[in-house]
Each structure stands twice: as C-alpha cells, then as structure tokens.
Amino acid sequence: MDVLLIAGLWLDGSAWDDVASELRSLGHRPVPLTLPGQGDGSATLDDQVAAVLAAVDAASGKPVVVGHSAACSLAWLAADARPDKISKVVLVGGFPASDGKPYADFFPVRNGVMPFPGWDAFEGPDSADLDSEARRAFAAAAIPVPAGVATGVVRLTDSRRFDVPVVVVCPEFTPAQAKEWINAGDVPELASVRHLSFVDLDSGHWPMHTKPAELARLLASAAVDLP
Image (tube, rainbow, N blue to C red; front, side, top):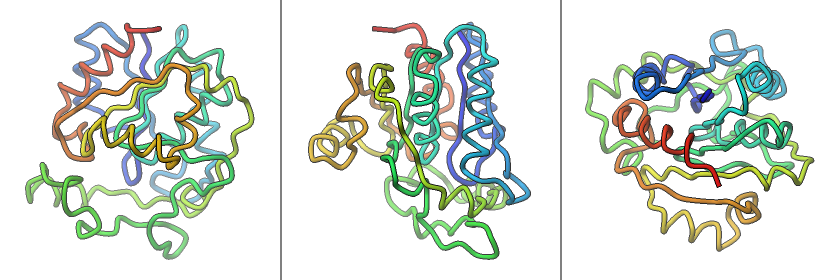
C-alpha cells in the first residue's frame, strides 16, 4: 500500500529516510513529501495542501496519509478534500487544527519565515531521547517555515472526513492523555471521528529520528488494519 509521509515543521521528506526504508522492507510503498516552500520561504498553506492532494491523487489505490506534528493538519485537510480516496489517516505526535484556526503560528516569524526556535522550547518529553549530537544536527538542518504556511488558516468543509479512520500515534504523550484532551474538547475534530484508535510509542516528539523501525512497524500495521 502507498503510505504518504508528511513531516512537521522545519523538516522535509528526507526526515523519513529510515522509516521509508523499513516500510519498503515490510512490503509498502512509502512516499515522503517535500512540500513547496521548504527552502525558499515563498509558499502558502494552500500551496502545501495542493501538493499533498496531488500525491493522494497520484497514489496507487487509496493511500494511508501520515502527518507528523503540525502536519497532522495537512493530513486532515487531505481527508477533508479527498474523503473517498484515503484509506486511513495516521497522526504522529500531534492533532489537527479546527476550521478557521491558524495552521502553526507557534513561534515568532522573522523576515517572512518562522525559524527553528531552539531547544529551550522543547525541553522535557519532546526532546528527552535526543542526545546533543542529534540536537545539533536537527537544528543545523532545520528549514525555516514560510510565514504563509505557518499563519495560513485551516479550512475544513466536508463532514465526510469524519468517516475516514484515524490512528493517533502517541510518542511524547500517552493514549490516556490524548483521550483526556479529546474528551475535554481540546481536539474537537477528533471527537467526531467515527473510527478512532490510539497507539503508544515510547519516544520523544521526533520518532522518525529516534525510533524509525518501531514507527515504521506501527505505520505498516495501520496500513493493513482497516475497519
């Protein structure tokens, strides 16, 4: 099965290299996406959504769409636009924004981009499994996010998105915490999903770097385990 892989902020498709290799060995076709604006800062959120939808349309059959961190919203926007063409959405370490909310205006924008803010913003469970060399390499490779992406407004229009099965992979938080947040109304989009499941993964916020084989196995399981 085709598995579309969308990394979160400051990452391009190469973030999935190790996961993709493992997925191939498990019999799937990984499609890591490098989105418009990753390197030149000129893209908008609409540009990135269009690139994801093009990948969905080009896939063989009905792909699994994986979103990591902020890109959980991109994966969910794809489900909204193509509810009949996606077999499942997998959300890794994040949750989709609601209609009318900004995509990812989490950190200051400077000179038209949102640069990586440094590790102080991610102290604790997010980065606990990254050693100093891994942190240095991540920061050195981090790609500033175009302001037009970070501040773009999420627009959701088709209630059929709630029929698309969703798996929440829980790395730096637990399934129990995720369920608590959903039940408290903090993640209204997932509260309406009809087929929602949770998988625990003992890692920090970037399991594609620290637990790629384990993450790949979870994604492979999601690809074959359909309701």
